[in-house]
Amino acid sequence: MIFKYERKVAFYWSEVFYKQLDKGAPYDLLRKTICINILKFKLINDEEFWYAYHFLEDETHELLTDLEEIHFLEFPKMQKFSKKSPITWWLEYLKNPHSKAVDRIGEFEPVIKEAVKMFDVITSDKKTQELFRMREKGERDFNSAMKNSEIRGIMKGRTEGIEKGKKETALSMLADGMSVSTISKYTGLSTSEIQSLKLD
Image (cartoon, rainbow, N blue to C red; front, side, top):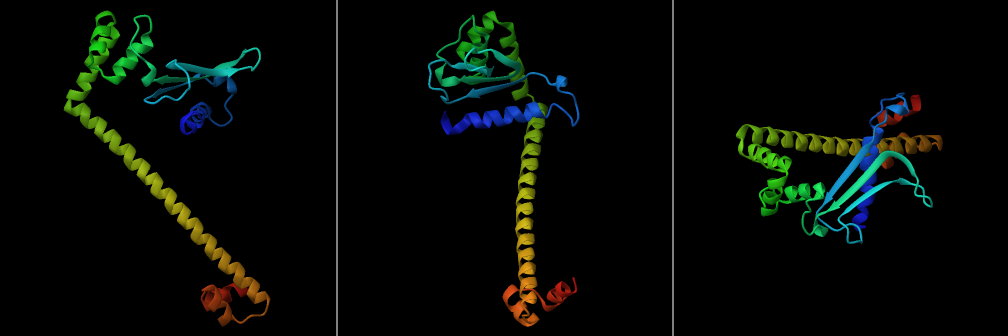
């Protein structure tokens, strides 16, 4: 598989599954969690475009639980839509809501035709577009704030670690009978900081 994508998928599926329960909640509250991955690249070395994975026993293929389900839908492998396969209708829609293929699907499937109408409303209505832009901006700002917070946390941790190391070194030097001025020279700590260590 490309770039170990399956590990990323397993991680996000497990995160969603795990977060269903509050602390101390019973396991019978867990509900089926379905992860659907729509890919623009070929992930699995086979000719099929749709793969579904579950927890199965290796030999008997007995299903352990139906709570887990992961799907991969690969655009490059789907040649054309089939009237008998609704999933191919939606893939065509996702590729291009205004393609000739989607027009043909809309002739026999009203849901797809309605989805195209909704797409047009969303993309043409200025208020709706502004709501989408605000939501995207909010997500970007949040992700940026989290990243900056993470960086600040790392830098703070490193700074605290360095200061702790200096103080531990100073204590060892004091224990060996070195003078405060010598300790200050080699650790960068002020004489008052070293004196406070002696008091501690």
